[in-house]
Structures are given as structure tokens and as C-alpha cells.
Image 1 (cartoon, one colour):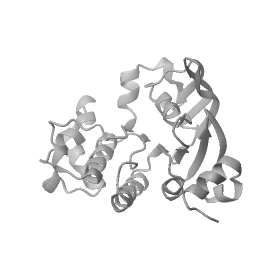
Image 2 (cartoon, rainbow, N blue to C red):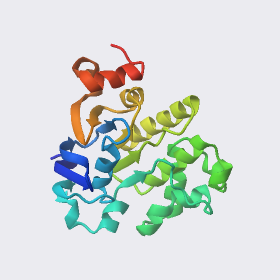
Image 3 (cartoon, helix red, strand yellow):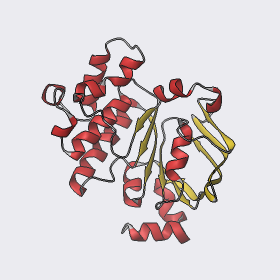
Length: 242
């Protein structure tokens, strides 16, 4: 059974069709990248998984259950979520941010879970735990955001352009931290990006979206061979060649 299953997803905002009958499966242990330009529907699709966006038609199932039958707060606390800007609480320390979800869930040793989560993304909790987000670089803030999303030990991690605002060197370092975390924790991840090169580097499978539809879906290793039309142009734009 797929850990995440999306069936015939339709979402409209007035006259704009954000999702046009999208169906998708994400198996346990996969890292799926949703790739496309602005307005392609990738963020809307991601946010249907944790009910930050409600569908007009179709359904989403997580762990075999329809998400509209699950309390949204309970659902969101069971799924790690990294926003594009990190979304850290500015007046909380890194340690407090990292331990937020374990605390909300009433897990034992929430502070210890937060410290271990910081370590898992390459941040020494003794050096960074007492710092505030404003005292960190952009890459460090994103690492804390990833740590917070993973601290409670979720089996699913959703990430919305988590590396898009970083410079090239910092982006690579943050990507490496995420790859290591995902492999060590065996977490299933779905992340949004407009960068095809990033998707090929980080993801095990890629779904290319355009105007609310998936135009091609393939394992990362096969995408160069399968890509035509729009997907091929995205590859060319990213400077990726076979």
C-alpha cells in the first residue's frame, strides 16, 4: 500500500484551475520531487497531503486513510512540514524551535528529541541550541526548520522549496544534510522545487507539473531518457544533459 495516495485531485481558485485531476502515489521510503515553474500547481498539491489545502474534488489518503476523515491538527502533527522560509518562531531559541512538535505531542524528553534532531542536520546543539533564528545564516535556519519537522520522528516529511532562497554553496550543504537525514531516518519525503538539477540530486522520483497536471513522472535515473517537451525544456534550463 502506498504511504500517500492522491486520486483525481481537483482544486480551483475562481477561474484558475490549480489542480486538474491529478493522481499520484508515493511509496514508503521514496523521496518524490514535484517540479515545475510558478503556477504549475506543485505547492497546492503538496498542501493537500496535510490538509492545508482542501480539494474541490478527488481524495487524498495518507497511511491508508482519507485525510478528510482525520482531524487536521492531528494529521499535521503526524507529518513533518518545512515551509519555504522555514517558518521558525523568531523569539524562540533553535533548541526550543526544534523541540516544538515533540512537546505538542507530549512525547517523552521533547528537549532531547530536539537536540538530537539538530545533530541529525549537522548543527551542534551546544553551539546552536541557545541561538535565535536572527543569529543564524539562511542555511542554518533551514537546517533548524528541517530538524523541527523531523524531531518527533514522523514517517512523512513535506518540504516546500526549502532550499530555493539559499546561495549555491549553502544550498548544497543544506541538501546534503537533508539527504543524510532522510537516509538515516528512512523517512518518506515529498518536496517542491522549480530546480530540475536539485530534484535530480535529492529525489528518488520526479513528477513534473504544468498547469495543474503531471506531464511526466519517472525515477530520477530514468527522467533524462523519458523527458520530452516541457520536461525537456526544464532540464535544458537547469543545464542538465544526458
